[in-house]
Length: 404
Image 1: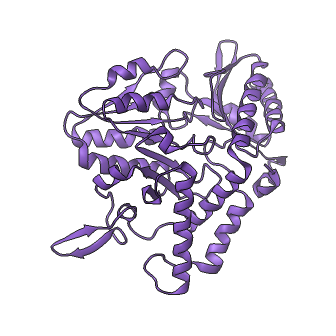
Image 2: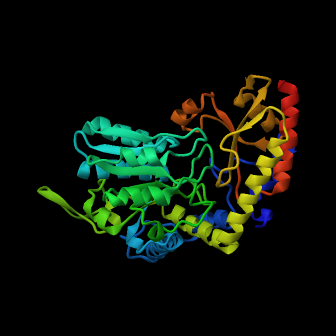
Image 3: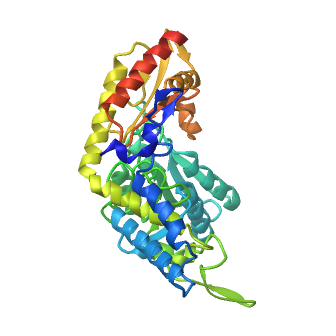
């Protein structure tokens, strides 16, 4: 884990060295990923699949090799189960439309959880409004973990799908996704995992989990923006209709009707982000060169160290403190009984070169449950180290003095 591999980490912010602790929003990119983008546009940029000329064939090879790399990365049974999308949000919207068209009827139920990002709430709300279905959510215990017994009671004869984040983007809590999948599958209910915050931080094996769908983004795992993945078991993807129409996703188009392409192309209308897929492949290679044991151990130790250092500051309230997490610490700061607004803390930290995220983190139902206007969120990547935490703590103490 060489920080020098990430050129942006040498930047100055307000004449201070950058301390980047906003990885749950997006990660920084190693030079290998930056170089891959430049290489693609400089040497073999060409539309893929349909060209017989050299550049098109080279671009096609790189794109399909990236698909195979993603399949290996999450242990999919086949690269045919890998659908390239724009990101997690796009993946979940695509699934909501396709699954909804095929399987959701009036009165049917979909279950999400109380810690979901808006991307795993709003598409299902839109579907339920369109189909007159019902969206339910798994409630939280007092410690903000999911109430699995309540989830068991939510599962019923009208439940058609469960879609849950493996890791909360606000709290960093690792949800008991294996138990959720087991309970749902006992009733033959498919499960989708929002892996936006898990895939970058822990090894995800879709076959071992036995999940039916998985969505994640490239830009949170050291890859470029605008590329993401929807994994689906082949038997499910074959049953779902495409969510978009256009080029590539067809066999034949006639005025009398259209026949659709095979997997995975049935779900990939139009020119794909073949430069993004190539750069994502390089990001995967980079992560694997570091290795999952090293990544998971490093980020776990950083998270624990951060919670320990925050615990030494009077007035800090850490949410879900001490629970197993994936690289996220969310907290608020109080002066006596008065909450110091997270936005004010984030602004003063930024003035000292420390980048964190503040607000509701696109998870307003969870923030409402917590009865706060938002939180300050610190989130780690493989290039962060204890010196980043120390710099953040020093900056936070200065902000506390100014705001108290």
